[in-house]
Structures are given as structure tokens and as C-alpha cells.
Image (cartoon, rainbow, N blue to C red; front, side, top):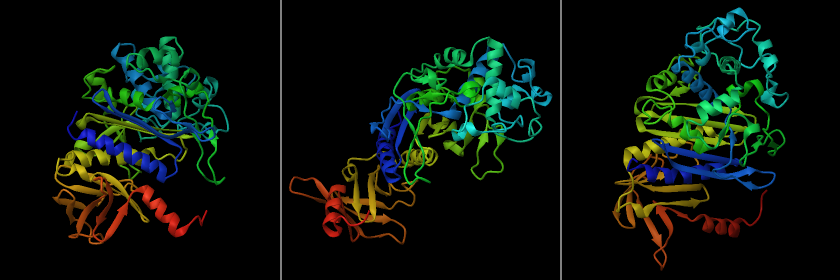
Length: 457
């Protein structure tokens, strides 16, 4: 494990729980793998707001389009076994398709470049208005022409990955959930992953709506069977199992269910999302982005009541999975924030004996601020920000309880002193940054109640 990683993981956990409270989200689970080992797994908030059940790391989530990365691995395992080729036309294995769709190759389907309709003519399954497509309904949708010719552009398609599920069934003679569980899930060593909700036996997080238009959240059961869409969106798993699985897809992984060649092909950037400003690309059942040593590859998912995202950071040998159980869940910015935290600690290192005593969260009426010690300084982070170390002021330590703000925006307090205040037992009770005093959360609560009472709503 990298020497800076334990300190980074501690702050990731503290920051995510603050973010969940700050944004009044129901729940969040996180797992981070270092190599193939889980270095952090944690859960915050509630699995079910209606019952008050606490969320734990053992709760399953609907991980939705993460399912595509499992299906892609299944196709690549069949290719490694010589049972198909990635340049096969799908119509050679599945009957009843429109001729243009039948001519699409497996690579085009896996890379979302076959031009297929995203969700058919009625995508009501994603709005809880209808069940997920059955086989006959899926084939009826695939009997009409594609939206674009193959290999013209990236066009995300749940129907395309559902078609790959039909291909696996046609080739193996088995139901997709049975085959993928035996040939992908089990060999990957996953004990908290199932291809569809009906197979899940552990505790389950419930989905939740946003706060609007009702002015409050309601529970979304999210117990919809995936039916013929299982290979595109059906999977259920814990955060730790998702991280454990994706860690094996890294081209640098020491242990994997796929060969290094298959992993390189799966995670290679094939098609840019050229009409988006996010800099994303699609590979074979994977999404990628980022630059330099912090490039990432992984997938995300949106199921009614759940937003989830996972990335591998190959150059760092780290994998991060963030799962949320609300339809407005912040898995995307939170995962970006986790990577930002990891990157900050990788640049600055862990706390030294001179700085380690400065750690803590301190409050004023303006909100919370974190003192985060690193190797040769203390960073002043804002846990309410999606990137907590953005423009963070820096304190250089001059004595055990005294320092100076040596780097800060002109609108902060550059050049001014920083100090810790202790009580008679030596416990830190408040801090001063320039002329501003910050106190503990409990002290600020008491101060605000004394000053303002119980007014407001």
C-alpha cells in the first residue's frame, strides 16, 4: 500500500459522510481497492428512510449499467475460449433481427457503436411505468432498422447489451443469469453480487426519489426484475464487490478472470463522446476519461432510485466505487471528489510528527472547515465543496500549537497567524485562523441556540 494512502482513506471517509449530511442524501456506500485488496469500505446514512434502517457495507445496491462490464467480460471469455470472434455478426447467433442490426459486429455492440435505439419506443421501465423488456418485446424492437448505420458514432444502447445477453443464451444454451453467475461472477471471487434482484438474498438498500415535486423523498422499491434487459442493467452488488471486480479489469491487475490482452481491449478508448464536454470515451463495456497518471476507466449506473459509479485508476493501482440510493444521488461528483482527495495526498504525503496534531473539523456560523495535516504543512479544506482542497489555504507550523497562513487566496488571510487553543487537560477546544475563531460542532450548536433560540423552520 502506498504510504500516503491510509491518511487519504481516513479523509475520504470523513468527507463523504459530511457530504451526505450536507446534501441530505439518504445513503452512500464506498469501497476502495488497492490492487486486488479492499483498503476501505464504509457506509453512511439510511438503507430505507421509511423504516430508518441503517445502511451497512453489506447492503446490496442496484448497480444498473455496471452490468454491461460484466456482460462484456462474459463475451471476452467466450472469445478467449474460441467459441466466438469479436468480429462475428450478431445475426450469426441471434435470429429475428432487422438485417442491418444482424450485420452489426460484437465489437460494435460492445462499444455502443452499432447505431441501435437506446431503450426502444417506450422507455417507461426507467420511470417505473412498465416492466423491463421481455425477450419477445426486445426482439420486436430489434426487428426495425437501427437509428444510425454501424460505426458512425458512439450511441449508448441498453438494447445493444440486452442483445448481447440473447447472444450468450443462444451460444451457451443457458439462461443469461445462470451462465454469467457461473462463468464471470464466481471465478472473480464475488460473494455479494447477483445478476438480478430475484437472486439477491442479503440486506438490500431501497431506492429513493428526489425531494421534488412532493417536497420530500419517497421510497422507490427498485425490485423490478431485469427480464431480457438483465445483461444491460440488472445486477445487484455491494460496493466492496464492485470494487473487487473492477480491480480485476485493470490491465495491470495481478489476478483476473481475463487475459491481459482482453483487458487491454476492454479498457481501450475506442469512441469519444464528442458532443459532451466531459471528455469521456467508450471501450468494450467500459467508460474512460482523465489524463496522465490519473486516467480512469470504469462504468456508472442509473436505476430508478439509485446512482452508482466505479473507476479504476490503473497507474495508481487503485479502484474506487461509490454507490448511492437516491435518484438524485451524487455518485458522480463524489467519486470525482474522492479521486481529488487521493491525488492531493499523493502530491503532499501523509502527516509528519510536526503536523499530525493539527487534524480536525472546526465550525463557525459560516459552516465547517477541516485542518488536514500533510508532510510539511497543514491544508485548510472545505468539506462542503465537491473538491475540498480546491484553493485550500496552507499553514506552515512554527511551534506545536502555532503556525502561519503562508499560502492563501487574497480573499482569505494570507500572512496571518494560526493557532490551536487547548483546555486544562490539553484537549484542543478551538482554533484561530487570522482573526477568526472556529469551535467544535457541539460548541457551535450551543452558541447558535443561545443566540438565536429555536426560531426558523
